[in-house]
Amino acid sequence: MKTAVIVFPGSNCDRDAAVALEAAFGRAPAMVWHGETALPRLDVIVVPGGFSYGDYLRSGAMAAQSPVVRAVKEQAERGVLVIGICNGFQVLTEAGMLPGVLMRNAGLKFVCRDVDLVVENADSPFTRGYRKGQRVTFPIAHHDGNYFADPATLDRLEGEGLVAFRYAKGDNPNGSARDIAGIFNERRNVLGLMPHPERAVDALHCGTDGLPMFSGLVEALAA
Amino acid sequence: MKAKVHITLKTGVLDPQGKAIGHALESLGFGGVEGVRQGKYIEIDLDETDPGKARAAVRGMCEKLLANTVIENYAIDIGE
Image 1 (cartoon, each protein chain N blue to C red):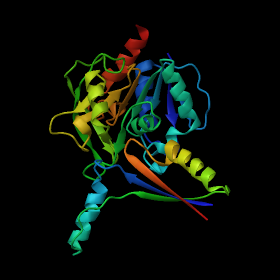
Image 2: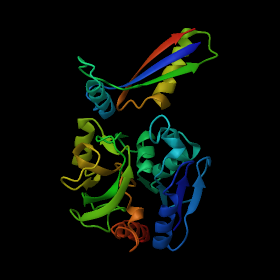
Image 3: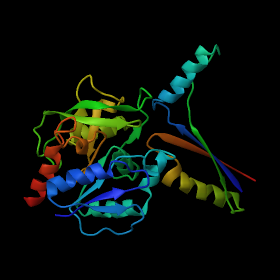
Image 4: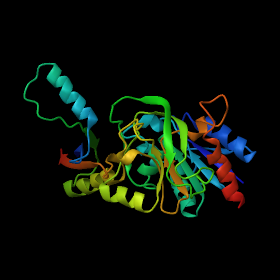
Protein backbone atom coordinates (compact mmCIF):
# COMPACT_ATOMS: atom_id res chain seq x y z
CA MET A 1 0.00 0.00 0.00
CA LYS A 2 1.34 3.41 -0.96
CA THR A 3 0.65 6.65 0.80
CA ALA A 4 1.68 10.24 0.21
CA VAL A 5 1.72 13.52 2.09
CA ILE A 6 1.44 16.72 0.08
CA VAL A 7 3.87 19.44 1.17
CA PHE A 8 3.17 23.12 0.44
CA PRO A 9 5.36 26.06 1.39
CA GLY A 10 4.03 26.69 4.91
CA SER A 11 2.79 23.18 5.69
CA ASN A 12 3.69 22.30 9.27
CA CYS A 13 1.84 19.06 10.03
CA ASP A 14 3.32 17.12 7.11
CA ARG A 15 5.84 15.33 9.32
CA ASP A 16 3.23 14.45 11.96
CA ALA A 17 1.09 12.96 9.18
CA ALA A 18 4.10 11.05 7.84
CA VAL A 19 4.87 9.58 11.28
CA ALA A 20 1.24 8.46 11.72
CA LEU A 21 1.10 6.93 8.23
CA GLU A 22 4.42 5.15 8.60
CA ALA A 23 3.40 3.67 11.97
CA ALA A 24 0.14 2.36 10.51
CA PHE A 25 1.28 1.23 7.06
CA GLY A 26 4.78 0.06 8.00
CA ARG A 27 6.39 2.15 5.30
CA ALA A 28 7.13 5.82 4.93
CA PRO A 29 4.81 7.89 2.73
CA ALA A 30 6.07 9.75 -0.32
CA MET A 31 6.47 13.44 0.52
CA VAL A 32 5.20 15.29 -2.56
CA TRP A 33 6.13 18.92 -3.16
CA HIS A 34 3.38 21.34 -4.29
CA GLY A 35 4.86 21.93 -7.74
CA GLU A 36 4.53 18.31 -8.83
CA THR A 37 2.08 17.81 -11.68
CA ALA A 38 1.83 14.03 -11.50
CA LEU A 39 1.48 11.56 -8.65
CA PRO A 40 2.53 7.92 -8.57
CA ARG A 41 -0.09 5.20 -7.99
CA LEU A 42 -1.32 5.76 -4.46
CA ASP A 43 -3.83 4.37 -2.00
CA VAL A 44 -4.00 7.23 0.50
CA ILE A 45 -3.13 10.93 0.17
CA VAL A 46 -2.94 13.27 3.16
CA VAL A 47 -3.25 17.01 2.60
CA PRO A 48 -1.76 18.20 5.89
CA GLY A 49 -2.24 21.13 8.20
CA GLY A 50 -0.24 24.33 8.31
CA PHE A 51 -0.37 27.70 6.63
CA SER A 52 0.07 26.89 2.94
CA TYR A 53 1.30 29.95 1.02
CA GLY A 54 1.00 31.93 4.24
CA ASP A 55 -2.82 31.64 4.11
CA TYR A 56 -2.70 34.55 1.64
CA LEU A 57 -6.05 35.67 0.18
CA ARG A 58 -8.04 32.98 2.04
CA SER A 59 -6.83 29.91 3.93
CA GLY A 60 -6.22 27.18 1.37
CA ALA A 61 -7.11 29.34 -1.65
CA MET A 62 -3.65 29.51 -3.19
CA ALA A 63 -2.83 25.86 -2.47
CA ALA A 64 -6.11 24.82 -4.11
CA GLN A 65 -4.76 26.21 -7.41
CA SER A 66 -1.36 24.50 -7.14
CA PRO A 67 -0.39 21.87 -9.75
CA VAL A 68 -0.29 19.04 -7.22
CA VAL A 69 -3.86 19.65 -6.05
CA ARG A 70 -5.09 19.13 -9.62
CA ALA A 71 -3.34 15.76 -9.50
CA VAL A 72 -4.87 15.00 -6.08
CA LYS A 73 -8.30 15.82 -7.51
CA GLU A 74 -7.78 13.41 -10.41
CA GLN A 75 -6.73 10.66 -8.00
CA ALA A 76 -9.78 11.31 -5.80
CA GLU A 77 -11.98 10.98 -8.90
CA ARG A 78 -10.42 7.57 -9.46
CA GLY A 79 -11.34 6.54 -5.90
CA VAL A 80 -8.03 7.10 -4.10
CA LEU A 81 -8.60 7.93 -0.40
CA VAL A 82 -7.83 11.56 0.44
CA ILE A 83 -7.75 13.13 3.92
CA GLY A 84 -7.49 16.89 4.36
CA ILE A 85 -6.62 17.85 7.91
CA CYS A 86 -7.01 21.44 9.17
CA ASN A 87 -5.38 23.57 6.43
CA GLY A 88 -5.80 20.48 4.25
CA PHE A 89 -9.58 20.63 4.83
CA GLN A 90 -9.50 24.30 3.83
CA VAL A 91 -7.58 23.37 0.66
CA LEU A 92 -10.12 20.66 -0.26
CA THR A 93 -13.08 23.03 0.14
CA GLU A 94 -11.32 25.76 -1.86
CA ALA A 95 -10.54 23.17 -4.55
CA GLY A 96 -14.22 22.23 -4.73
CA MET A 97 -13.53 18.66 -3.60
CA LEU A 98 -15.73 19.17 -0.52
CA PRO A 99 -18.68 21.57 -0.16
CA GLY A 100 -18.76 24.66 2.05
CA VAL A 101 -15.99 26.87 3.37
CA LEU A 102 -13.97 27.33 6.57
CA MET A 103 -14.38 30.89 7.81
CA ARG A 104 -12.65 32.87 10.56
CA ASN A 105 -13.45 31.40 14.01
CA ALA A 106 -16.56 33.04 15.44
CA GLY A 107 -14.58 34.05 18.55
CA LEU A 108 -11.87 35.60 16.30
CA LYS A 109 -9.12 33.85 18.25
CA PHE A 110 -6.72 31.13 17.18
CA VAL A 111 -7.84 28.13 19.22
CA CYS A 112 -5.28 25.51 20.27
CA ARG A 113 -6.59 22.82 22.61
CA ASP A 114 -8.08 19.34 22.77
CA VAL A 115 -11.72 18.99 21.74
CA ASP A 116 -14.26 16.22 22.21
CA LEU A 117 -15.82 14.96 19.01
CA VAL A 118 -18.62 12.55 18.21
CA VAL A 119 -18.19 10.07 15.38
CA GLU A 120 -21.31 10.68 13.29
CA ASN A 121 -20.75 8.05 10.63
CA ALA A 122 -18.51 5.00 11.10
CA ASP A 123 -19.35 3.64 7.65
CA SER A 124 -16.33 4.89 5.70
CA PRO A 125 -12.71 3.82 5.17
CA PHE A 126 -11.66 6.66 7.49
CA THR A 127 -14.05 6.01 10.38
CA ARG A 128 -14.55 2.23 10.30
CA GLY A 129 -12.21 1.90 13.30
CA TYR A 130 -14.76 3.78 15.43
CA ARG A 131 -18.36 3.19 16.49
CA LYS A 132 -21.13 5.56 15.46
CA GLY A 133 -21.75 7.88 18.41
CA GLN A 134 -18.30 7.21 19.92
CA ARG A 135 -16.67 10.20 21.62
CA VAL A 136 -13.05 10.84 20.76
CA THR A 137 -10.56 13.55 21.71
CA PHE A 138 -8.39 15.18 19.04
CA PRO A 139 -6.33 18.37 19.28
CA ILE A 140 -7.27 21.43 17.24
CA ALA A 141 -5.07 24.39 16.31
CA HIS A 142 -6.67 26.82 13.88
CA HIS A 143 -7.88 30.33 13.24
CA ASP A 144 -10.22 29.56 10.33
CA GLY A 145 -12.23 26.51 11.28
CA ASN A 146 -15.75 27.90 11.28
CA TYR A 147 -17.52 25.57 8.85
CA PHE A 148 -20.13 27.34 6.73
CA ALA A 149 -22.42 26.15 3.97
CA ASP A 150 -25.90 27.23 2.89
CA PRO A 151 -28.80 25.49 4.71
CA ALA A 152 -29.65 23.31 1.68
CA THR A 153 -26.07 21.99 1.56
CA LEU A 154 -26.07 21.36 5.32
CA ASP A 155 -29.36 19.48 5.03
CA ARG A 156 -27.95 17.40 2.19
CA LEU A 157 -24.78 16.58 4.18
CA GLU A 158 -26.86 15.46 7.14
CA GLY A 159 -29.46 13.62 5.06
CA GLU A 160 -26.86 11.66 3.12
CA GLY A 161 -24.73 10.75 6.15
CA LEU A 162 -21.82 12.89 4.99
CA VAL A 163 -21.10 14.45 8.37
CA ALA A 164 -18.12 12.44 9.65
CA PHE A 165 -17.42 14.17 12.98
CA ARG A 166 -19.24 16.74 15.07
CA TYR A 167 -17.91 18.74 18.01
CA ALA A 168 -19.49 17.32 21.17
CA LYS A 169 -22.42 19.34 22.48
CA GLY A 170 -21.17 22.48 24.18
CA ASP A 171 -17.62 22.02 22.80
CA ASN A 172 -17.92 23.83 19.45
CA PRO A 173 -14.68 25.84 19.44
CA ASN A 174 -15.20 27.96 16.33
CA GLY A 175 -18.88 28.51 15.58
CA SER A 176 -19.11 25.80 12.91
CA ALA A 177 -22.59 25.33 11.46
CA ARG A 178 -24.40 22.44 13.15
CA ASP A 179 -21.22 21.66 15.14
CA ILE A 180 -19.65 20.11 12.04
CA ALA A 181 -15.97 19.17 12.50
CA GLY A 182 -15.47 16.90 9.50
CA ILE A 183 -17.29 15.85 6.32
CA PHE A 184 -17.05 13.29 3.52
CA ASN A 185 -17.62 13.78 -0.18
CA GLU A 186 -20.54 11.87 -1.72
CA ARG A 187 -18.41 8.83 -2.54
CA ARG A 188 -16.93 8.88 0.96
CA ASN A 189 -13.40 8.56 -0.38
CA VAL A 190 -12.53 12.12 0.62
CA LEU A 191 -12.57 13.29 4.25
CA GLY A 192 -11.92 16.82 5.48
CA LEU A 193 -11.69 17.66 9.16
CA MET A 194 -10.34 20.51 11.27
CA PRO A 195 -9.15 18.45 14.30
CA HIS A 196 -5.84 16.59 14.06
CA PRO A 197 -6.07 12.78 14.31
CA GLU A 198 -2.36 12.55 13.40
CA ARG A 199 -1.52 14.38 16.62
CA ALA A 200 -3.28 11.75 18.72
CA VAL A 201 -1.47 8.55 17.77
CA ASP A 202 1.15 8.15 20.48
CA ALA A 203 1.06 7.75 24.25
CA LEU A 204 3.13 10.93 24.44
CA HIS A 205 0.36 12.87 22.62
CA CYS A 206 -2.88 13.94 24.32
CA GLY A 207 -4.11 10.43 23.69
CA THR A 208 -4.34 7.82 20.97
CA ASP A 209 -7.87 8.38 19.67
CA GLY A 210 -6.45 9.09 16.21
CA LEU A 211 -4.99 5.58 15.84
CA PRO A 212 -8.25 3.88 14.74
CA MET A 213 -8.44 6.25 11.76
CA PHE A 214 -5.07 5.09 10.43
CA SER A 215 -5.49 1.41 11.36
CA GLY A 216 -8.98 1.56 9.81
CA LEU A 217 -7.48 2.80 6.55
CA VAL A 218 -5.06 -0.13 6.50
CA GLU A 219 -7.96 -2.57 7.10
CA ALA A 220 -10.15 -0.90 4.49
CA LEU A 221 -7.43 -1.17 1.86
CA ALA A 222 -6.60 -4.77 2.79
CA ALA A 223 -10.25 -5.81 2.56
CA MET B 1 -6.18 49.36 -17.73
CA LYS B 2 -6.67 49.14 -14.00
CA ALA B 3 -9.25 46.88 -12.41
CA LYS B 4 -10.50 47.58 -8.92
CA VAL B 5 -12.16 44.62 -7.26
CA HIS B 6 -14.21 44.80 -4.09
CA ILE B 7 -14.90 41.51 -2.38
CA THR B 8 -17.57 41.49 0.29
CA LEU B 9 -19.26 38.85 2.39
CA LYS B 10 -22.73 37.91 1.18
CA THR B 11 -25.71 39.13 3.16
CA GLY B 12 -26.48 36.70 5.96
CA VAL B 13 -22.91 35.42 6.27
CA LEU B 14 -21.68 36.18 9.78
CA ASP B 15 -18.77 38.62 9.86
CA PRO B 16 -17.17 38.41 13.32
CA GLN B 17 -14.32 40.73 12.26
CA GLY B 18 -16.77 43.40 11.14
CA LYS B 19 -18.64 43.01 14.44
CA ALA B 20 -15.41 43.40 16.41
CA ILE B 21 -14.54 46.56 14.46
CA GLY B 22 -18.03 47.91 15.22
CA HIS B 23 -17.54 47.26 18.93
CA ALA B 24 -14.12 48.94 18.81
CA LEU B 25 -15.58 52.02 17.12
CA GLU B 26 -18.29 52.15 19.77
CA SER B 27 -15.78 51.90 22.60
CA LEU B 28 -13.77 54.74 21.01
CA GLY B 29 -16.85 56.91 21.31
CA PHE B 30 -17.98 56.91 17.66
CA GLY B 31 -21.74 56.96 18.00
CA GLY B 32 -24.32 55.99 15.43
CA VAL B 33 -22.49 53.02 13.91
CA GLU B 34 -25.27 50.61 13.02
CA GLY B 35 -23.17 47.92 11.39
CA VAL B 36 -19.70 47.16 9.98
CA ARG B 37 -18.86 44.61 7.29
CA GLN B 38 -15.25 43.96 6.40
CA GLY B 39 -14.16 43.02 2.90
CA LYS B 40 -11.14 43.03 0.58
CA TYR B 41 -10.01 45.49 -2.08
CA ILE B 42 -7.69 44.32 -4.86
CA GLU B 43 -6.11 46.42 -7.64
CA ILE B 44 -4.99 44.71 -10.82
CA ASP B 45 -2.97 46.34 -13.62
CA LEU B 46 -3.81 44.84 -17.00
CA ASP B 47 -2.22 45.25 -20.43
CA GLU B 48 -5.69 44.89 -21.99
CA THR B 49 -7.02 48.10 -23.58
CA ASP B 50 -10.60 46.99 -24.26
CA PRO B 51 -12.78 47.58 -21.16
CA GLY B 52 -15.18 44.75 -22.03
CA LYS B 53 -12.39 42.22 -22.43
CA ALA B 54 -10.69 43.49 -19.27
CA ARG B 55 -13.91 43.05 -17.30
CA ALA B 56 -14.43 39.53 -18.64
CA ALA B 57 -10.87 38.58 -17.74
CA VAL B 58 -11.21 39.94 -14.20
CA ARG B 59 -14.55 38.20 -13.79
CA GLY B 60 -12.76 34.93 -14.57
CA MET B 61 -10.09 35.78 -11.97
CA CYS B 62 -12.77 36.45 -9.36
CA GLU B 63 -14.63 33.21 -10.04
CA LYS B 64 -11.48 31.11 -10.05
CA LEU B 65 -9.40 32.62 -7.26
CA LEU B 66 -10.09 36.10 -5.92
CA ALA B 67 -13.50 35.41 -4.36
CA ASN B 68 -15.01 32.32 -2.80
CA THR B 69 -18.53 32.61 -4.17
CA VAL B 70 -19.90 30.31 -1.46
CA ILE B 71 -19.61 33.24 0.95
CA GLU B 72 -18.44 36.26 -1.05
CA ASN B 73 -19.70 38.66 -3.71
CA TYR B 74 -17.43 40.68 -5.93
CA ALA B 75 -17.78 43.99 -7.76
CA ILE B 76 -15.44 44.99 -10.61
CA ASP B 77 -14.59 48.54 -11.57
CA ILE B 78 -12.60 48.99 -14.80
CA GLY B 79 -10.75 52.25 -15.40
CA GLU B 80 -7.63 53.83 -16.89
